[in-house]
Length: 435
Ligand code: GUN
Ligand code: ZN
Image (cartoon, rainbow, N blue to C red; front, side, top):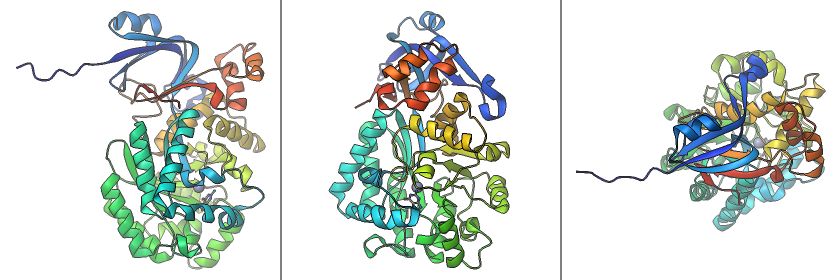
């Protein structure tokens, strides 16, 4: 019996390529390979082969060819920390973290009690991501379970790999945005059972941060995490000095901010700790010992006035670090703009990040923070989530890249000045998906 034969669709995408053999923070720009006339073969949504265009044409004569000219093929960007419910209030003026949450964020998040509003914003948000070349995000939702359904449903329609979780808060938030320890556990568990591992969805256990959870709620979510150790857990850590002082008052027994999580079962290798700017030596040591991921959110850190993340020191110490927009505390949906801000923040600490380092952070670094090796890389077997960049997308960028002598010099103006206009196309599992 012949059985059912599934037609294999294969396509060769031609263009320039950059791929990484190692982490450029550890191995320098030698860790990256630039192929001027390169190709990737996409077979049924995955990368089947990669290399020089001539060689791949010979190896795969049956494949259809799409020639992107001098477009630069890169992995789709991976945004390791965002708040999709804050889409409509991005760029809200004039507040630092705690006032910003109370003035802008909580009123907007309250609107997600209406599932149809959640659906509208979820679709809008994912389309904005695809327009900016981001193919995977790890996002907070609101306390409303329907806000989680909305983002995973919108992601499934677009075929996107998305990480998300119900934000849990049982104190220091308006009545309309509070759950309790038991309902946070129950709702999170029900959502996890419904979504985790369904298609490309991954559920993330999500206590917002220690000030908006009682110790009982943190403990309940720590218990849930222990029951589902394959899930990631996301939260915020040491973003602003006022916040850290507040945590000290709320948890007088804790050794430091991280200890409020550690004490309740919320410190581990699958933990994603957003911001992590003002860390004590003990916190740095513990985060590294357990192999937790830190997520750098540079446009947010400058926009809300939080501080300067120690990228160089933390990388040198061996921390796992991802890069993220943190929209709407972050002021952009673009991972290009986010790389630019990471460059500027590091400059203010006396270190110029190389474009290879910035690019690695926005792709493989963030994917590793999410414990993924199937995205963020152009390698055979990886999922075919990729972008084609135009390195001359505006007159200002074009005139600079025109006189570049290396690929890094050609790419850097797009990193510093680029936006959604630099994204020629975004592919999700090999499918053109730029809205
Ligand atoms: N800390 C707790 N919640 C938030 C949030 O929504 N955005 C940022 N930037 N920090 C937070
Ligand atoms: Zn955040």
